[in-house]
Image (tube, rainbow, N blue to C red):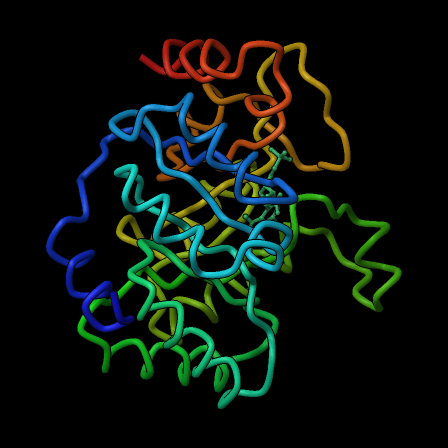
Length: 245
Ligand SMILES: O=C(O)c1cc(=O)[nH]c(=O)n1[C@@H]1O[C@H](COP(=O)(O)O)[C@@H](O)[C@H]1O
C-alpha cells in the first residue's frame, strides 16, 4: 500500500474512541510493541509511538497498529527550522496518524509552517505543541537559562501554540486549568506524567493520578510504564479506566 492510499484509508476509518487514555508503547522493537498492543483494546485506548520504537521499527509499526484498529499518536517531538519541521509533520500526516507533535519552543514560524503543511494533506492529524517536558522542574529550567516556574513557561508556550494555529499542547495535568483559562475550552491538553497511586514516579516530575487529571479536565492522558511495566498490563489499564468512570 502506498503512503497516499494509507492516508486516505485512515481518514475514512479513524475510530472515535471516547477513552482519554493513550498508552505509550515505549519498546525497542516491533514484536514487543505489538505484543503489548495485542493485550489492549482499541475501543478503550489509543496508542503512542515514540522515538525509540519509531527509530527501530520505522513506519511499518504505524501500519501494523492501524490494522489492529488503534488510533496512533506519533510522538517524535519535531524541533527544527521551519521548513524541515513542516516537511516532517507532512510525512507524518501521510502515515495516517491521529496525532503528531512538535516542540513549541521551536517558535511561532516553525509551528505555523507545520500547520500550513498539514492543511495541504488529505488526512489532517491533530497537531500538538510540547510545552515543558513533564520530567522537568524549576531547577532543570534554571540549568537551561530559564530561571522561572515551569507553569510560567508552559502558559507562555501554550498561548504561542494556540496563536500559531495548532490544536493543543502537551503539558502536565497540573497546568490544565491555567491553559484552559489562557487558551479557551476547545484547545486540547495532552498530559503525560500520569501516575496512579502507588506507582513509581521514575523520571517524571510534574505528575498527577488519572482521576486528578480527569478532574482537572485533560482531554488525553498519556500513560506508559504504569501500564506497560505492570505485572498484568491489561488489568492495569482496566483499573485506570475503572478509576475514571
Ligand atoms: O510528548 C510526550 O508524549 C511526552 C511529553 C512530556 O512532556 N513528557 C512525557 O513523558 N512524554 C512521553 O509520555 C510518555 C510517558 O511515559 P511514562 O512516564 O512511562 O508514563 C513517554 O513516552 C514520554 O516520551
